[in-house]
Length: 395
Image (cartoon, rainbow, N blue to C red; front, top):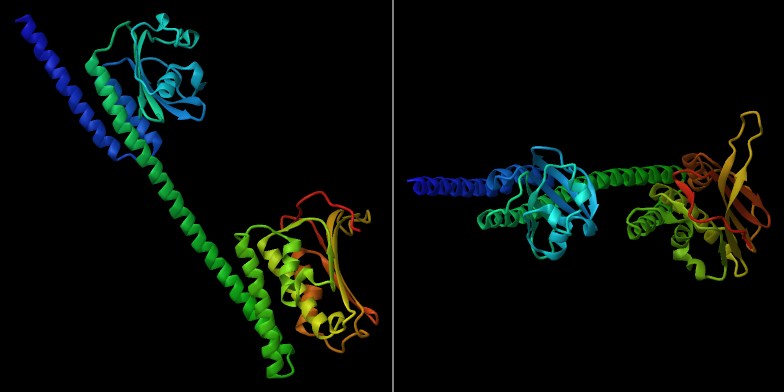
């Protein structure tokens, strides 16, 4: 009768363990994060194995991260250990389940780490034997050899856990993609509105200054093409920071670019935000169009020199003027027809003297001399303008 009762209890225990395994697999299918996976596994593995404690261990590079635990006493929750100095690391590195009836008789166990705990025996099961990503550790306070059925159930749970972890990572990746999509749509909306506002301003100002419809059409189209080239450049840079020299090259491209011997350009690497790159591109475009229509580039011997540098600016000691480094950009034309001060200011002149300088908190000046036009822009270094490398001396 005793044997029959023992058999019945064993059968009931096996049935309960099987039910727990099925329920665990169902619960794992509903998890969405690694933390949720760990919470399900640590409790279910302890119930199913009858262990006194269970740890859920993640592989984190070359370390074992004891993410969660359910035990009669504290173990190593939240701690990280080298893969080579931890039995969970051994199980993951070898892709094998480890059964240790006596932890102090096994050289793979870091005994000093176990002495403060209740652990005397353990089973460590890797999650996904091929290229393990985690491990499930079951621990007992009394030395024993866990039954083969217990080991098999833990290994079955580990297989279900592997799928749950991959699902959690996929879910996190999809969430990240959706968040990025939302961010990109908002960013696109912001940029479209900014672009439309720029086009509206260009149209209004150009129309106000144009003497005839034909002049308006020519100037407006030219400025729209300049804005388009600025956007093309920024798209190639993924709308990140852009080097000043690239902005200059894009602005000069319709007129031969920096390969044209009439152009000379030099200066250190300067990183510009997208908004600053657009504003500076439009400024350079205005200068280029003016040089081609009225200035140095109307003559075969004309030359345009563009130089930029970083200068230290000192305050006057009375609170007037801010100390600190500034970007100084100079556009100098020589060899063209004599230059005279215009009788009226058009949109281009206002843009050059007020637009980008105002946006950057700096100042700009157009100088009309018989030998050629000059333009100087000074703007403090900031989040919008930064020296990409240490400034170098200009030749």
